[in-house]
Length: 228
Image (cartoon, rainbow, N blue to C red):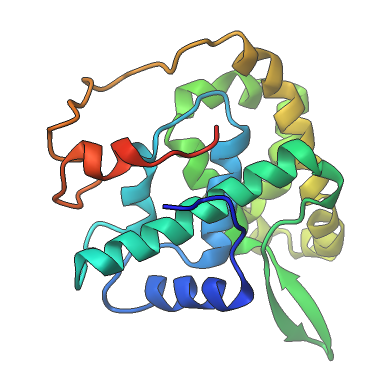
């Protein structure tokens, strides 16, 4: 599986079509949500293996039509994950979140709700790990628009205080800077960790893969080389 090449526009559309199709679970992500999710995983305090987070992407009710389909979609997701890592680590100034757009008052407006929701879901996979940042004043500032547009509590806040929405464009423009600030905050901590913390029992190479594919671990996520 070649994971070095970024997805083309056509491949992003292919992945989006699958995630929105009946084959994916009802709680499957769309591509903007996936982008936010993978960004949180890329910059967070822990290196989580694909077997931990891939099932969250597909949704609980995933129904693969074939092994080829599963391998194809998994490849697209892992390539996008690697592409995000490349930009964050090698070309941070060019990093941009993948956002939808909608027409509002005669102009195109970028929508950040899905991206922020995905980022929050990525944080939720390691809530205890993210807590040290969330409990700091600077962390609250970095995460403010993400939690505002990506959580139910944030949506309620927007409903109560519609004047906050006037800063929407400002929040959109600041997402990249906030992501880089969080990555810098976590970088020293990540560097001190020489091994990945295992909260779950180690999966044997001949055991069934925990991602739910039905394949042996060595033939599935255990054989996927993903940058961390």
